Length: 232
Image (cartoon, rainbow, N blue to C red; front, side):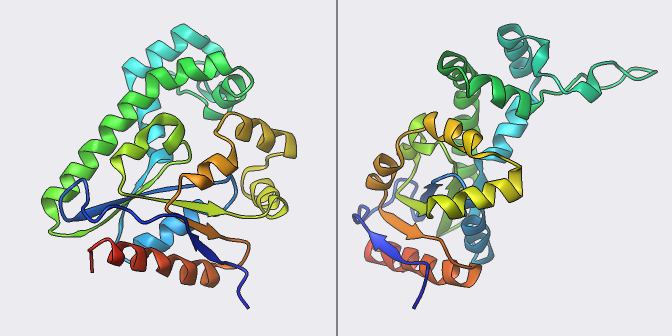
């Protein structure tokens, strides 16, 4: 018996958008183990684009920082960088936790943030996919992005994989890894599409209540799915 089961909703098209490489969008419920799934796929040779890391890079951009300070004020800056060190220090950085606390409590603020950062993130995704397509005769790109559907980035992808897990398992994971409360988890989920809506738009749904080995086995279904789409 396995605790990590797989179900297939639909099959992708027989040809891919970026030549012979397939782009897989990886989404899932918060705390479902999406990052672990991305690591497993990377170990199997996939090129993984981490949207969270790209988001970090975008927030460090001077033009982005200036626009966000204008919109949200200096309260989004990290305390430790509030005063420059002797001799001149780097400009204060945006504290993602502070910014997140602000925007996830205000839907208008969240939309304003996304209007600034999402187009820049998409441009970086497109460039990375194009670079890989030019460098590889075939292969797999994984776009690991929690808000892939909300941001409209799914049109870059050939296949959407949804990671799922029971609410109790997901809460335990985010309490351990992020220090979140149940209320924080609920607030983040309210800012995204309903989970059932996301799941219904996926080509592959992977249940991940078990261990890493079970998850790795379940992800083998992705190879078979891509194989049915015409890629060996």
